[in-house]
Length: 74
Image (cartoon, rainbow, N blue to C red; front, side, top):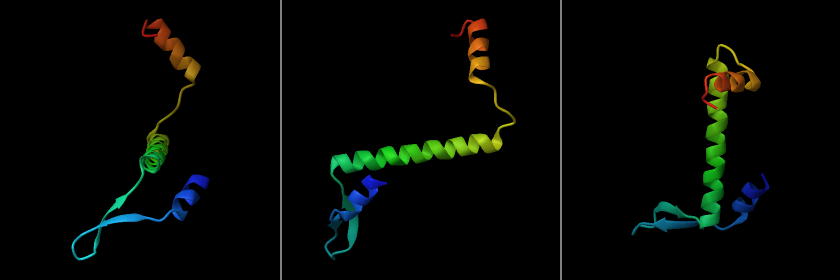
């Protein structure tokens, strides 16, 4: 959350058209990377939520690992 607050305090730089209308936002590469990482984490959380909602059941990790060993896939 601290990173988000730090980003909010920086002045925002825009690309504007010939009429002064905002068309794009300029980010430094570190800020862009942080935002991209954050979006990826949120997408992962949404995927997990969806998997939990649609799952008919879960198996223990050890059970799956043992099954993969027996099948020679691990």
